[in-house]
Amino acid sequence: MGAGIKVEKLNAFFGNTQALHGIDLAVNANHATAIIGPSGCGKSTFIRCLNRMHETNPIARAEGKVKIGDTDIYGKGTTPVEIRRRIGMVFQKPNPFPTMTIYDNVASGLKLNGFNDRKQMDEVVETSLRKSALWDEVKDVVKKKSGASLSGGQQQRLCIARALAVDPEVLLMDEPCSALDPISTAKIEDLIFELKENYTVVIVTHNMQQAARVAEFTAFFLMGSLIEYDKTSSIFTTPADKRTEDYITGRFG
Amino acid sequence: MANSGRVSLRRNISNGVANFLCIAAVILVLAPLCAIFFYLIVKGAGSINLAFITHTPKPVGETGGGFGNAIVGSMYILGIASLIGVPLGVGAGIYLSEYGPGMFCNVIRFTADVLNGVPSIVVGIVAYSLIVLQQKHFSALAGGTALAIMMVPTITRATEEMLLLVPHSIREAALGLGIPQWRSTLSITLRTALPGVVTGLMLAFARVAGETAPLLFTAFGNQYWNFKMDQPTAALPLQIFVYAISPYEDWHKQAWAGALILILLIVVSVALVRYVTSRGVLRGNH
Image 1: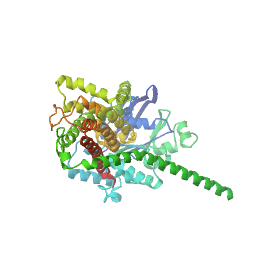
Image 2: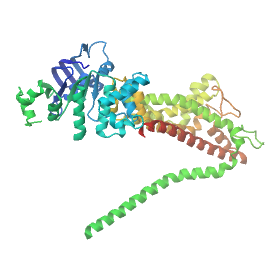
Image 3: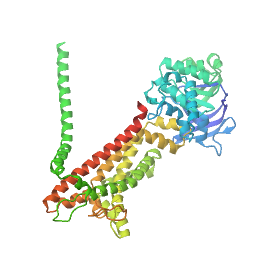
Image 4: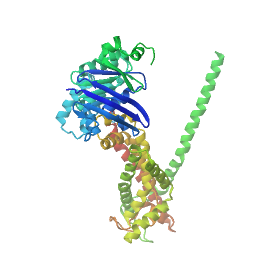
């Protein structure tokens, strides 16, 4: 099952530059939430704060409170490693491990964390690839072909399968379709629809139609601040803030 | 039309000239290597026989005998050197690329570059005073240590460069899966860079395999078989050196043969390691 995320007074910094200013936002479990806004507004920084990927940059730090379910992810005694197992991530550019087969790519999250039951691994790999709608295309070559030999769209679905294999509660997607053609994009959007049943999805997107298509809720960011957060239908039809309206009608950004 | 014909003629000619220059450069680079190899075969192949690779040297005045103990001794010393040098060099390379940047990293990098330029005889003296003087006798361990010191900077820098070529997105993918940093570095980043890292290892190996100076007063050489770490050990470069400067005609021949064996040893081990690692890495790409 998916878990909800509650963000309170989240500030994020790169060195002395503040990238996020006091974000308060609650992501609903088992729904898709879209993050929109112009380039450089802090969308990616925001979702990278949700699974502590933000701090992998040596000059970056974050303060505030982020809770997934009942766990305070920045609390004492929680480690980035365990948080990232619960909150998976799909990146902008497909990034399969180039030296691994399709199978090993999907199994990597388990294998490299010491999980070794072969039979169960086969099962997890198959279910994950089915969930990411890739199984039918690759089932005959999972142990033969390298992940890097797939097409861009397939690679991205492989990355989704890889993230799902460790059984996360939340899936963060950072512009997952920006490097893909329209057909692959449509496949991934269909996929997000199905994933919502079992996972909480947070998706950063530059494409407002995409936000409208896949997400029940949409948050609009501008210059590191959360401007508006509401049901997607309200954001796109009756935005409360003038700046949101300007952005979605294409007057800037 | 006429004009474009002239342009394409000019392009064809300059293309031809550039091609020719490239091919000429390749030939110029390969020529010395082929010449050395050819010369060694002409001079040395005649003296290679079973006795040469299985026997120890005969005393002056007796014919026959061989470099068997030197061949094995060289492998032994190089084995010790690799055992010490590879983990240290690769470890330092990982540190520089994965845990940098920082002041400390700059110091390590600078030190490695300086160490790379230190004359090999000086490295020999270091190993001599660190090990030989303490143990009070020459040893294979001292020889191996001297060679290891020479391998480390090359391996460190090559490992660092190769790891830095691995895209950042690969590291992020691993961290994003909740894989601990050390595991991701070893199983994913290093693995991805492995072919390049192995090339660096082989360069370092080949470079020290023929070193004579650092072995002069560390491994020292030996007329007999030795398999003990703490005893003087024969090595091919040393034996070649001694035989080449001797006044005896048949020793000269054996020196040529020894040089040929040394080169073959390097070529075979480099090819072997490359074959094994490339097979392992490419398994996923078919």
